[in-house]
Image (cartoon, rainbow, N blue to C red; front, side, top):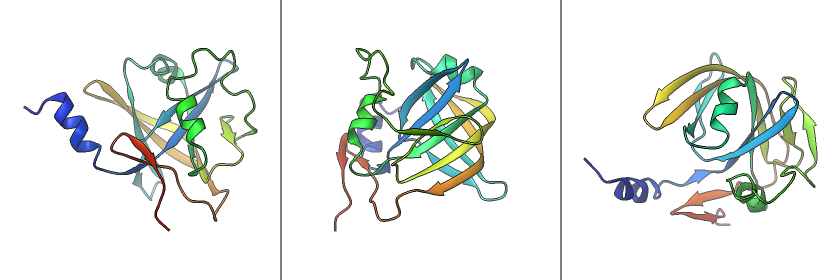
Amino acid sequence: MVSGDDFRTTLGTFATGVTVVTFTLDGDDHALTVNSFTSLSLDPPLVLWNCDVDASSHDLLEKADNYAVNILTEDQEELSTRFAGQHHEMDDPFEGIDLFRSETGAPIFEDTLAYLDCTIDARHEGGDHTIFVGRVEDAAVQNPDEQPLIFFRGNYEELAE
């Protein structure tokens, strides 16, 4: 069987976009950086992403009914690192971020490339992760002239001009 290090290195050669998944539970906003996001179905519109079962947000997500996927622009690396578990010293990691509420109540960042507002359709065990399937209730491109933030070989990258 492949080692964890070799598996991670190999998967790192697959460039991905970067998203921040946001949700509200019991009146508190939560967020985590996700690059495992992908589309699943057009009819019905479904997306999926994964969360490590040991992640600090995992148990909260198990109780959530909905979430939003915020697709980051190349200028939003700070948002990605902020919600990748590197904000423990912040009292409010949402401080200074302009938000609006989606139809489902999830917080959405105002200046992302795009967003998808989802209700949780299914959860599946997948090894040391949980796979979250979301039914897309609303979606919009907010900044069509911006470029996406890319993650490749463990680093943030930008699309070549």
